[in-house]
Amino acid sequence: MKNNASPSGSNDDIIIIENVHKKFGRVIALTDVSLTVKRGEVCLIFGPSGGGKSTLLRCINHLETVDSGRIIVDGIPLTEAKENIDQVRAEVGIVFQLFHLFPHLTSLENVTLAQKVVRKRNPEEAEEIARALLERVHIPEKADAYPGQLSGGQKQRVAIARSLAMNPKIMLFDEPTSALDPEMIKEVLDVMLDLCEEGMTMVVVSHEMGFAKAAADKMVFLSDGRIVEEGSVQEIFENPKTPRTRAFLDQILS
Amino acid sequence: MGVTTEVKRKRPGLIPWGGDLSRLPWWVLVVLLVFTAGVYAILTNRHWEAAFEFALTGVQLTLILSLSSFGIALVVGLLAGLGQLSRNIVFRNLSMLYVQVIRGIPIIVQLYFVAFVIMPVVVDAINNFGGTLQAIEPLTNFGISLANLELRDIKMMYRAIGGLAVAYGAFEAEVFRAGIESIERGQMEAARSLGMNYVQAMRHIILPQAIRVVLPPLGNDFISMLKDSSLAMVLAVRELTQVSQLHRARTFRSWESMGTAALLYLMLTLSLSFLVKSMERRMAVEK
Ligand SMILES: Nc1ncnc2c1ncn2[C@@H]1O[C@H](COP(=O)(O)OP(=O)(O)OP(=O)(O)O)[C@@H](O)[C@H]1O
Ligand SMILES: [Mg+2]
Image (cartoon, rainbow over all chains, first blue to last red; front, side, top):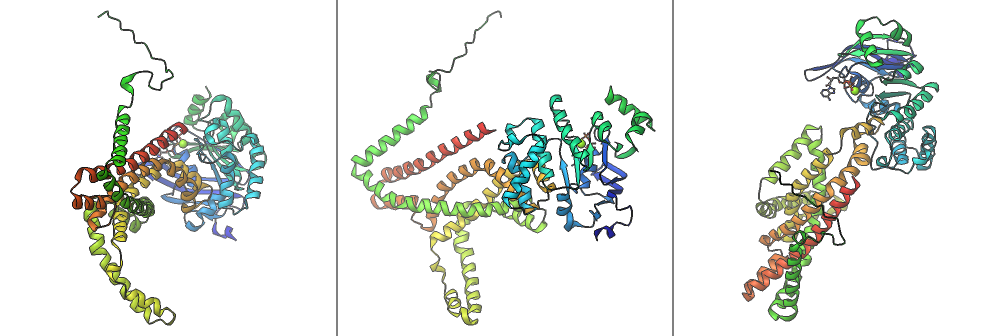
């Protein structure tokens, strides 16, 4: 099986990141980042702007390639398996800060397209799945609306449904609520909490500390491309090891 | 100092121009007058009538010439436009080379080049290919007909279409490239992260959005193509300009023959540009 490819880590480690380095020209985005995420775990990444959070997330589904180190997703080493990239990507859903819905397609079509094109499901099956998912994110009535006719919170929920339609094993969220008006944040976080309850493995970049307390199994403080601190919610909030973590938390909690 | 000028805002009234005569599109009126005068002349004056009837025989070729050249140019342009954005070095550089070289040469030179330099080479190649085919049993007859193809069998009309298509393919490549580049990067990333490959993402996500962006510039380029199809007269293709020129040479009625040609071109181009304008307006509303 494909798990032979990963000598390190147990079968439970669905994401293994080992000594990853990444530069954009002269700008160092990630230095020597290592992190493992277990099946079913919710890992919350936080840290100052420009710290490399998005870059790390984008490396996990190969939207960015790493300069050195390796990333193994569900037993498939990304760096070596170029031909498996599309396969890995279909297993890993990502939700962006700015949604990136397809504006020329309705909500329903946004959710069915990749099912038909990538998963080769027939149109009826894809539509059935899509409607069920829109129901699950609480906007079945917006199936025929175009993204331009939706509020930010609704767009983000369609985006989540679009990713879920591929039956991903992992969901990545890159600041999913930071472009939203306050009254819409909750509706998106609620959907994410549901997902977490269903046992989805999630890596979430967010500064919503309420969500962190409710859902996160592990928190990672990323700053200047390094993992400064990693620990359980309790450890991070009550007993941060570094003053920088404490200072950053004070700043965002105030 | 101290002088306050009150600016009264005009309310939009029943008349679209707010009753302000200076904002009326007077030029449209002039065009309509000229058209009316032209039609009147054609109906009442036999010299104008003769020029018009002769010119009409060229309009059809002008349309066929423009439409087929533009159709091929669209295909070539899409390929070269995608090529310019491709990560493949060979494909990208070939596309760049094509676009930059072609855009730097006058179309008329390209027409001569395609008609009298490229076509002979192509026909030679076809002849050789036919010669090879002849030896293969079931294809013998087909091979013979290819081997016997002569340069003069390729009508000037086809050579003109080839030349114009090559020239305009380079323009359309730039239009398509700009259109695709105008779609934000997140669209491609979202498509790829759903597991679509590059081709699927282009086909289902990027191109359908880019098409809306490029439609107006493509329309404008088609209008240019209509006018530039007149260059085919140097290859003696009997399109509108060529037949008008023939009529002029025959009858020495320059005013009538060139006047009719101009009117007919204007009729085509102005109505098309009206279409493009309304298309642009509709897209502006959608945004
Ligand atoms: N495509 C790129 N080209 C050049 N530099 C980049 C690119 N993407 C990211 N960077 C740089 O890499 C560093 C890390 O960026 P990243 O987007 O990962 O940070 P972040 O933690 O997500 O920040 P934010 O909270 O603002 O989203 C930054 O200095 C950024 O400017
Ligand atoms: Mg970011």
